[in-house]
Each structure stands twice: as structure tokens, then as C-alpha cells.
Amino acid sequence: TWVPSDENLGDDESAVQTARLSGDGEARYNVRAISRELRVAMAVFTAARFVILVSLMYVGATFLLQNTGFVELLLDGVGLIFIVEISEIIYMQVLNTQIKTELARVAPM
Image 1: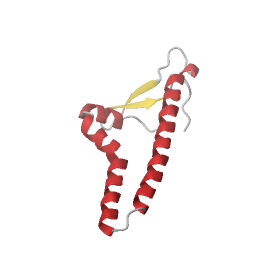
Image 2: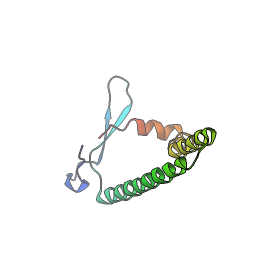
Image 3: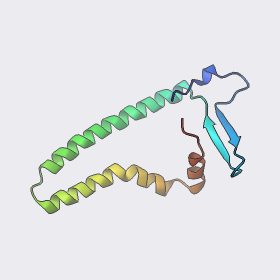
Image 4: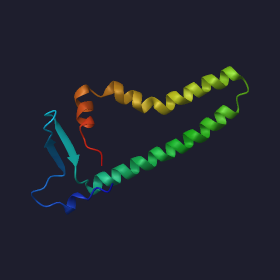
């Protein structure tokens, strides 16, 4: 969904809204607006991730197609899976539990 710019918010409105749910009593966050600088940064990072993804697909496919043995092909495939999933592994190991729970409370856009 589209999130409006923070310039469209009124003076008394906040870009992040906190709402208390009656069932569990924990705060949930709702992002209502994103600044222009954050949009540009997100676009740059998304473009960079896309370029990395395409180059990794190309290099990985040529790397796997050059192997003739079954064992080498299997081990190289496992290595490529590790490279693809390293960002999630780092996320799970580096971020502390409090930040992970706060990120889980942010409502999807």
C-alpha cells in the first residue's frame, strides 16, 4: 500500500502512531508517513539489493553450470544458499531481542 509523505501530515499528527490493543495490552506501532529522505534511501538500497541479486544469480548459475561432478555441484549449491541467506542469519544473531520484538509490533503497510 502507499504511505503518504510526512509533508501531508498536519502539525498535530505524528508519522508513527502507537495504539494499545485491548487483548494483549502491548503497544503496536503504525507507520503513517515516510519522509522524502527515507524514501530516497530505501530506493537506493532496494536498487543496490536488486543489482546484487541479479549479479549473484548470474555468477551462481555460471558457477554451477561449470561443475561436472555431483558432489561438487551439491556443495557449491549449499554454498550459494548460505550466501543468499546470510542476511537473515546476521539479523537473527546481531539484533537484540528488544529490537526484534519492536519490529514485530510494527503493523504491515
